[in-house]
Image (cartoon, rainbow, N blue to C red; front, side, top):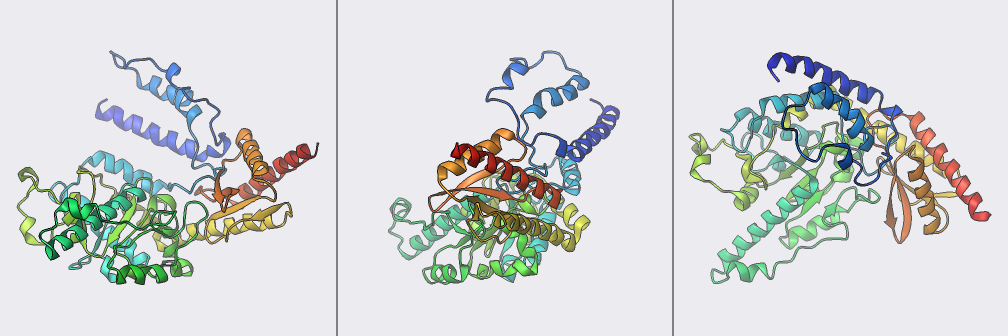
Length: 432
């Protein structure tokens, strides 16, 4: 493919993407395929001679789309949202074109420096304590990880390295192996200190947990993967109170802040805690500016060596939407969740199972777990909407998460009427 054909095909692909997203409401939200459906539809080996571009595009609708779960459909209410916006998609295209591998400042200075500034922008939106910001001379700072689970692992490894070195400094006779076998990581059944748990969007009390960790000199990592985006709204910022006790904090703009996957924002109070755990400096990665003291090499803040120019997505989204536009997006989803909650409460056959704080509603039919499992099975079979369940205190519960950027009240109302009809059919069948 030469540059002239790339121009032509690129414009066609943008049209295809726009048409897909514009018409996504008309597609069945959950695919009607069985495991292994795809292998018989494509050849067993790669082609020896080139295929035509037209054949490839034709196969998208024939082979790929039948097996796609449409996460951005306004009838997708499962898991948590995955962010999507046109500015972020455009930035991703530019990221692909630049194609840098930003492991060090020298590998692409703009890639490194824009990330540092964007993480400060976002930290200020959240009103994070100054200690978490890089600024011009701060000891902390932010880094884009691939996922919240990756950020948790990075924090765990950094904490382990830090305490091991402290103990060895205090007691030089201790070997690393002797220390490692005695180290303890404390967690709840949600893993780390969590703001907005996956099951029901519940919140740990950082004002209680934080001082205990600080008193015991324990590394405190906070995971706000879904809920963190909401903290840019003043009315939800109190949910982050106590973050000042943390050593590291993470949330996913790629869930709810219109920045496409992957973009998981992680901050630390002391960047040397990360670089101390991951720093590796072979000669071929050294560069002449290292001694200036102004250099950030993000390979020392993460597990992989390579990294994409992901901060472009943040830059585009933050500038196109502005803070007020991002706040409006969050508030719309929260409002729709409360609308759904009110609909559920109007039907005495149903119950709400957890406080609705942000964009998730946990609900169920009053009755047995088996009854609710049967309801979810009917919802899944109908494939008009997509939900997933959770367990709360041994109860089988249905989760209704407001997800799509384009979801409106009409979609929520249609989803509820669909659920009610299926529940009526189920209860009627139970009586018979």
